[in-house]
Amino acid sequence: MAIDSVTSSPLGPPATEKDAKALQFIEETTKNTDAVQERVLIEILSRNAETEYLKRFGLNGATDRDTFKSKIPVVTYEDLQPEIQRIANGDRSPILSSHPISEFLTSSGTSAGERKLMPTIHEELDRRTLLYSLLQPVMNLYVPDLDKGKGLYFLFIKAETKTPGGLLARPVLTSYYKSEHFKTRPYDPYNVYTSPNEAILCSDSFQSMYAQMLCGLIMREQVLRVGAVFASGLLRAIRFLQLNWQQLAEDIKTGILNPKITDVSIREKMVELLKPDAELVEFIKKECEGENWEG
Image (tube, rainbow, N blue to C red):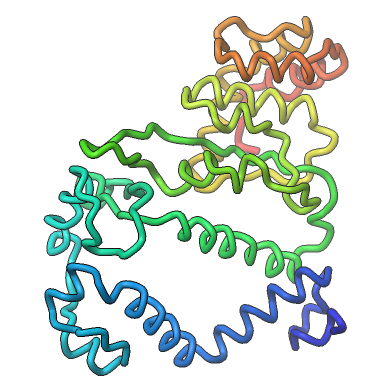
């Protein structure tokens, strides 16, 4: 299949055969939404026919849309909270899912002031990984040469807890970054980061930011993209540089990492990356000594 045959975009053909397949998947899925939704519903209801929740409403193994809509009510998180709490407390019976619950993904808590627990299964991580893989092919249609250089992306994990039943509860990105899908991801020229895994996976936000910023400065000549998951993260990074550039420059001057960075894995990794660089130190001083940080 020719890579320019799967999209009618005036932006040009897909960058690679891999991109072409991803764009074809998006095209087919979004063109046939009704059939896709019906198939997904059938799969969900078939796999979970023996769950306590579906049995409660007398679905009796039905998988058609009309029966589902007539018997299963529209609910809120609060409606499902008793079942979720049972799972959190250690009940391993098939309450909401026929597959074992592997962990809870947590909401930010910004809407109601309290984090919500969303039960998930191992298979869901595969779906999330697939979703993430569809982003780059679309971006490549609009922005050329994203396979060149490196990206200085500020990526962080957040604290995780355990429920009374022993299941992990953590934000979705923390779950992804700590998974083998991310930690052992194959080389992809479109996703080469300056930040090593050791820095991203450090739970101490100061040490993580410090190491990621230091790596970005060291590899500055290779950096073609800068970003963060949320815009606020990029603003925090700029403010962090404003407050800590002198110590960062000192590390680069001496080739010795700031003793405030105590994370063992970060220190071991920085031994490989951090070398004295007087030219870079002068560059940092020239750019950061001024009072104007507006860009």
